[in-house]
Length: 403
Ligand code: CTP
Image 1: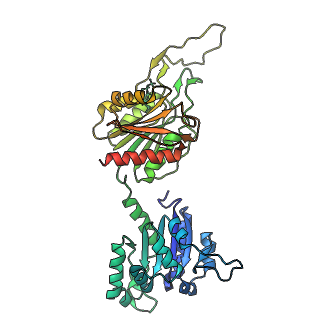
Image 2 (image 1 turned 120 degrees about the vertical axis):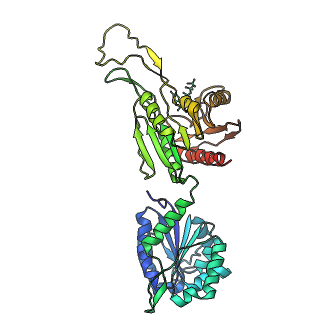
Image 3 (image 1 turned 180 degrees about the horizontal axis):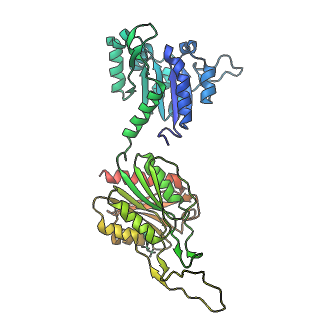
């Protein structure tokens, strides 16, 4: 999955011959599952039609502050457009538009949107070779760089003028790869490894029966995705769960019993930077697994149970520099119990869910948590979707790791 998947990309098109390549650019973004809106300078419409770009982007394309041809004239709100975007890309960026961007000129919708945007801005210059090396262009590039905008350098080759040299807009696929790599390189967990346990465990009674619990795995899977989206390589050790995950940074390791989860966790723990144990591991398992199906009789059946190994506590004992996070699901004396678990299992933080809170716990899509760190600082969160809770958990971990 691309880091651009689900992201909102605002493409600004200016009047250069390379504008014809923006059709491919829009297609590439859409293929990566990004949402695309396009703003054009009025003159760029001579190079590619708004109809082409609106059809490919599946969104209306605007080039003026209001659409004169429309029956009900509508103001095209540059502020909304600027705030909508996760990333803005100006491609091709002509010398004229770059100069205006660098100087705060605001005489068309694209420039007003640029000035209103708060997101990272990329621009891919395209012009003739002498224009590209002109001191005024260099000055624009330097100014835009100082604003925090990122240049996607022009390449060398044959130019529209027939001359050969530097000034060709980077190819669409190279622009997309450049942006993906740039985003990845700035992610806070780039180069880090994260171990996550999720879901229930099943403890066999006989070949067809087991002791299990109602954990769905939703919380752990959401954490795995949130960590991967921050650039981490994730080992997701999951008990039996219907949850699906499709992310190139996530390696799923399926286990069934607490013993298997223990072994898998210990296999990966030494190599990771963060371990988050959200699985609802069975605390007990049948002492003896019967190898043939137990037949029904009229007599009462007793199954002797023996404790499973506590995976979290065992990792707490051997941890070196890993940031170790546990979960606590409590019904009473929640804070006190969670703090005791934090200390007893040698954790860096614990995520507390109280079953007294409506919408928290196993069977829901929501959760309400309090995070307690090893200094006993408590951070309480509102009831949220598990996806949003996962992002909160990862943000809190990243903040504390960097302290
Ligand atoms: N956990 C674990 N291995 C176990 C049991 C629990 O790794 N065999 C982890 C869970 O994944 C969770 C944390 O320990 O992160 C808390 O589990 P919980 O069952 O709530 O705590 P216990 O220590 O078992 O205490 P109690 O059941 O008394 O609340």
